[in-house]
Image (cartoon, rainbow, N blue to C red; front, side, top):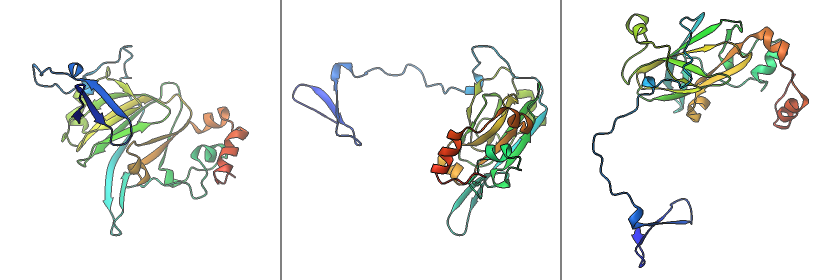
Length: 239
């Protein structure tokens, strides 16, 4: 940063040839009057006041795992099961449409797709690194969220802290050595990926797929020619 002869402060961006000029009189000169308060997302409430179901019909527990391999590579996974692409590059949705069992590398978990079906997902993260997890196909209620170093979720210790009026998200961060508890309605047939939104963690294996209503998928979904065209042009083999 420097000042030119006109008294305008300039700042050259390191990734651009552009120069931003800001008048000195416009620069902030205030000081905080009190210590900063960090927002705890779990203290927020949805503006529409739609609350989470008070029950669940299926629970899925996912434990984050990290492996440092002898060859120097790093693997992340859920329940020590590494997410991998299909051997023949066929998407999970196509495998369902073709009446196949979804390959184990997708880490598939079958859920129903019935009226009143509620899925509870518990994610435990016993490592110091935080992880933002993203679920496709749904928004979820965050009914439980541990502070950093809270440890893994325990019904005996934490059930009393769950709240049905928590925020709804499609991405939620699990703090280091902590947990989150999510609930959603299984009302959207499809093959929905849950993964860490730190991209290299997904590529290193931290992902899984919910198969939501196989019969409903086959009854509702059709593979238009545009889908197969995109896949074939990308070199994906579809049977």
